[in-house]
Length: 409
Image (tube, rainbow, N blue to C red; front, side, top):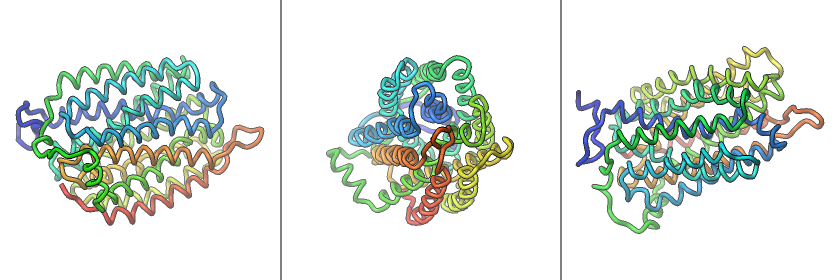
């Protein structure tokens, strides 16, 4: 096997095929992303079952992200002190238990607490996955590797969300979380069995007080620009995503069972285009690809948020392009952010970045919940177009921010 296709995560541990490493990380990414995104298409059913308003549903979504933000910030104090494998297994076990609690939830309050628990572990998982990519994959292949792992969102859309929606519509909204719990147990066992020790970052680790680590991160302008990019991207996407499904049902005329096709078509497209964006980023430059994808993404954002009762095929085209460019701008952005810090601080930095991302995503969902209202006496939603304009503004701001960001490693 050529050296370029093998990574050695630990100086003392066995080498692991790069493909296997990316497969395991993608499987972890798939389950924790599905746990987050499944809430959006379940929105109409949850709002009906629990008799909650759009604002309360927005709070249900943002509770996960706010919890992930707090845990991400706390984990930055210590996560670089541990073997990456040990940290990954501990976090993933907690995430699995949180997802199981969601499956058992009998009331809105119980579900809210379970989402907080799942978010406390799930948010940090995403940061650790990206830190492992940064530690293990050379910079010249990092864009493609990030694209492959980020394609887990597409796979969740293609298979996970339609299956979850099918189970929810034919059984109950609990069923997708039971399925996800079972998958998480299998991935947990695979990770424990296959992943070698990952201590390479510890060779460069200098013992510091946790507060000094955070001070080092927040005193660097490059890190602050990376956080700014994460905030603007989150506000550019997650103001729209949580209410996409409720809007399609209430305003465009979709049946709840038809929502799975939105994610199926979007996922089929982005499983290809996300990886393509990663390869193009490595070839032509991550900033150039991001700028082009971000600029073009403005069109589907505005179209999707202003749809009326159009034929379903037109809605499918609009939402598919929305997901394509949502992913195409996110892949090079995450690769740039991962490369903006040296390895010895990458775990802590990515944890803080995850905290910033989740906080911004929660703020975006909460903001949308404040803007969007119901038509009196009707299920139709008002002001989704305003949300689209807000997302467009933040997309344009992200293009200015990315120019300021430098790659360090």
